[in-house]
Image 1: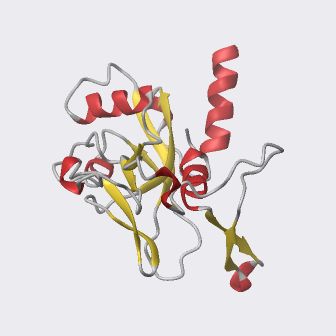
Image 2: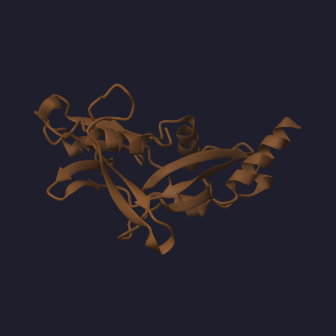
Length: 201
């Protein structure tokens, strides 16, 4: 689930990107593909022409997980029952020329995490994305899922409109003992290793 979002965008549009160079010389490079990777030769770009006009849109989320249900419950007031819920990953960086996401690691019950959402509670639709087929015979109305992020093909390429200011590109969750504290993003690997050692001891 964590990396399927990027793969889906490439599959639907036939377009992807990579970063070349190092340090200040890092630059984005556009990638286009006629077929998907592998020997099958399956065509890339489901929404590249009208061959699939009967398909109005693809609705996707990379957060349809048990972690999402736990976070929703806790941020809506369910007791954490002696556990700490941590979410780490990367926020979208909307600055012009940004090549990577912004790392984060937050306590789900904390004020900083709650402040990401308009009413202080994580919404169900926060990671829901709708990719609209530009050739659809029956376009899906955006009003059907108003809180989702909607992707559409424009004259300048694929663009999105998001209901929420916060966009999380990917994330994972940790349920830990509250005594452990909250690791920074960079500390997460060592934090997880300590948890594994404590669990196996």
